[in-house]
Image 1 (cartoon, helix red, strand yellow):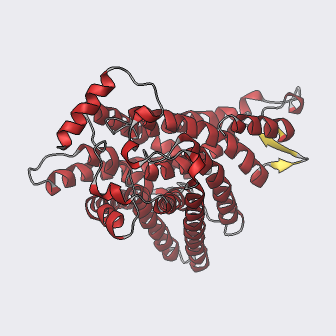
Image 2 (image 1 turned 120 degrees about the horizontal axis):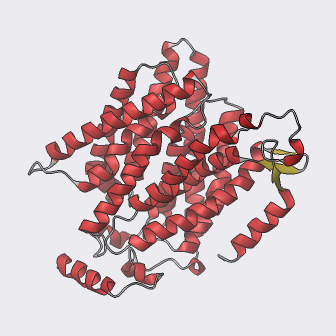
Image 3 (image 1 turned 30 degrees about the vertical axis):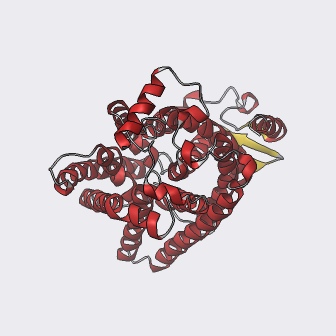
Length: 414
């Protein structure tokens, strides 16, 4: 199956992909001002998003003591395939004419946004799925996402610059749909491998720092150049800063001994980047961005403390990385903030479109996730057994000190 994917992509690239006017030599003339080439404007954003996708997400997902290889390497594998597949699928939706998909660096940014959707969903099933299952999930999720995004942008004309609806909400509820179908009752009682280590927590928080630093580029990459893009950067930085300060305060406040939790620092500090997303380029004031970061952080923190266990035991939704807290709840808050901002600007009709976009994203993501999860349950896709979840030995040649770490982990559970 894995070998079939590069063959498929090679065939599609050979048949349909060519350069756009900014990359095609035949489109250049003696009068062409090469310094106005689009690459000089968009490549810095592309490079920043690259760091988020391939380093930020990868390190963040390496928090488990015995699944660090899986978190980093399967992120690498899934991201690489997702970007290439998204170039094709989004190309047919947005960049197809004259029988070809015309691509430039701008296409890569769009493709990496689609890739981010898959990686967020990946967080819900981390350690419980095989590499083949992850590639199948990406294969199915990206077309569903691309069609949803196309409908929201083309027909509802929603300006969701930070992707709160089309990226975070869609990815979250798609991932929850998948993990609901892959429910494992025994995991509600805990698992011996679900532990962290000093080193794995440090690596994970480094992923948080990479995401934190480059998130302003993520939120502003697709906004209009000029003041819109400038506001997007400002709002994102303020939102992230306020959610970080609030996360530190709440982490100590909610702990019985007043100590900080590394899981809070790894995840909750990022909440502000999502909650400002839907209003990121609007004239909502810096104070509003600060408040959104605080509110998003509070919702995210309480979600990890109380909602995640409830969903696992009562709703049979085992959200391994808590994507519902960091992406779902905060995405809903962001969308609500955008609706309020639009109503205050007396744009009632546009607010209705915003609600419609939210409904469409929820419907397609949940249904798509449930369908994808049902497909991933097929026995020939090599899903690991309950005993071998969150264990690198299933898929990797591991170093000699791995067995010692595994023994120590199991002894600590007794």
